[in-house]
Length: 434
Image 1: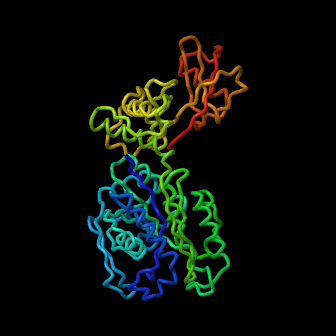
Image 2: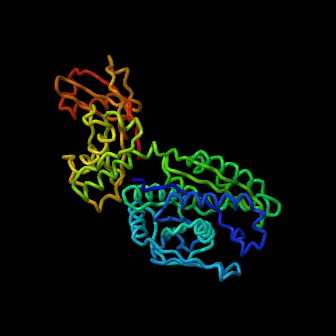
């Protein structure tokens, strides 16, 4: 069922290729070993497509470029080795979808045919050595704010989860070019400092720290791959599983190799909901409950599935209490209802899926409370009850900052007068997705 497989940060010095290094590649032995290990791990994921972002891909000044070619090729002739050529099949449909999705998200981007640059060729060399035969989409840098690259990754993630191809993200990038005295860009003490901070933050999957690195530190370090890393972290979602394989700076340039995998505990309910909606739109039947489930998804439970489009609600259906034999079945059913039967909206169309955001809220058992003082709209959802009428509002909703506002909305949803006395229940949620 998994469509987003994970990704990796891979460095791109051509000297790592034996034909170019002529023995000097052995000076980066840790990097060579780690690149091979990462490539073999990625090959075991059996990806259909690589989305590879490179700092050195040709681009227009203020826009990222996406290569939508059916065939991609390039050589290292710029480094004196024209015979070191690679050819890969492109994934034009996904590439065109990315241009559309990023454009809708306010990212300046365009299609652009281009040769594979060394930032793509070096990581792809290791992936080819590991037996990977996936199609490739390459993405270049443009003159965008760094947070935009993180946003690009997030949009890519949503596109992948709404699709059917198995996708891995390759972030091509070196770190500081000024780590040691023999660095080609000259030495600066900021180089080592920058690399330590980036490696530590990446190891924690911590995008916010990287988004707030001082600009002066980045400039003095002569960094290369920070935007690639932010793109990768955006694609990998919250709390990814990170395996750092190596760091060294044998030629004065920092090389890090890091694998990131989807946190399956975080991803499962979102993927289940997407699969349910896709299956229903194509087959008009409910997606079958997977045969192998973790215990937490086998037990009955209540859940809400919410869909948004461009930040606005597009559908939301859920249950106060379990109605299905398992929580997985509850999510499958509510996902279809949110997409097709929310009376406030027209049914979702299949061509809309790539534009939607999806989240799943799993509810705790409701707890009766004696007064409003025990409520907190950021921490607890609320249920109001008067006779047979009940209204529910999820916690931590944008624009709902006070208990009074939370109760007013919940009462309105239940058709209860704003001043009426009600029984109060609170609950927590575990929120998956965006």
